Length: 279
Image 1: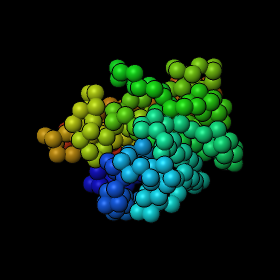
Image 2: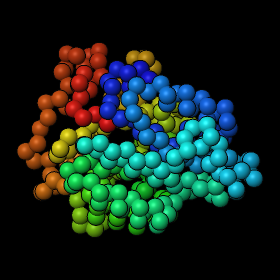
Image 3: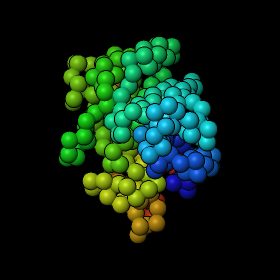
Image 4: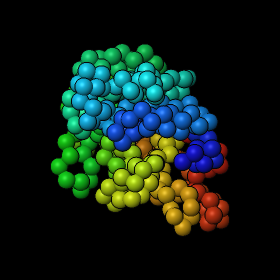
């Protein structure tokens, strides 16, 4: 993972929770040391595994005490620059084992943050728990207040929602599950990047996502660890218009950087050496 980040130097790295297995101090110390090695800025939100499970007193009265002490005091960080706004939302809570929720209070706060930036800024929301169900994955419930969250995000120009709870990568959009007749919000769920807890088609596999954004579109490349290549390599690619594009279509758009050089692709990842506005 560190080699991939160092090789392509994204502008930004998102870690969507579950930094630890059992929220132990030594696990948070290891996670902090790992993230400190990123050569670029990052944004991290906690997951349900970052809340103590068996230390019941902590779980009830101070569920994020160890996370704050050893990793970050900020549970809902916000990153912004001239081109991008990334808003973190904490969906993990001490009184549930694995399910999550977005509080209505946080939704109102996020709405004000979204309205504070120009329309052309790429707006990204990061939460640990998923807002749309995974494909062929049992009866996993989406987080509480997902409907209200999607309604607010889609009406306030959010381009992309990132999450990472289910150990399986998948991608969809808000209109498939919460139809409002609006331009859809792209929803991307991360698989397992640094552990052996992959599920579904990614069992015992490590994956991550590379996101490229320009003024009119978003490209998501799904990367999977290939043992024969001894590196992460691109597994699939998905291309979407930006939410504010009118009409909402890719017609007339093109980007040469997203067309890999066939000769180089034999030995290199089909991602440009200098990708545009990588996220």
